[in-house]
Image 1 (cartoon, rainbow, N blue to C red):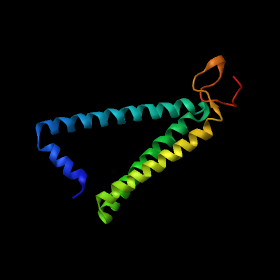
Image 2: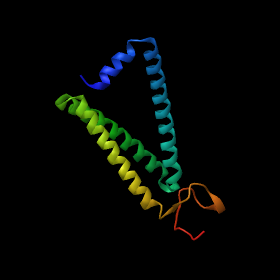
Image 3: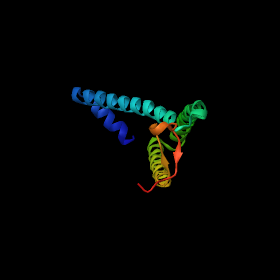
Image 4: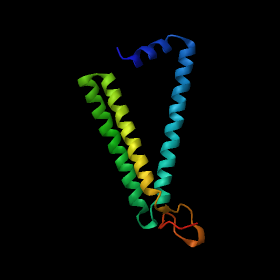
Length: 132
């Protein structure tokens, strides 16, 4: 039996465990709410006005596609090799994704992206770095 199931069953067996589990689920829910709201806002603010709708639509479509592929793929993987291996694979995918984000951050640090609108510039415009 996976360790996650053992810990979950042990926590559910007591009132304190039930309260801790409830608090954990509230924290997870609040985190997802913040992520969902801010991610769409960032896409909207970074995208140039001419393609803002397309960018937001692409973000929404890719998010839904990833959720579908992840759910079906994770379920199939867990069914075939077990939940422990599926969790390990999910962890590896998360670490790989973090690596991609860090790499993109290093690349994007060479380009200045304006999120506000100073001096009449359009939100989301990309400006070459300056020697400020």
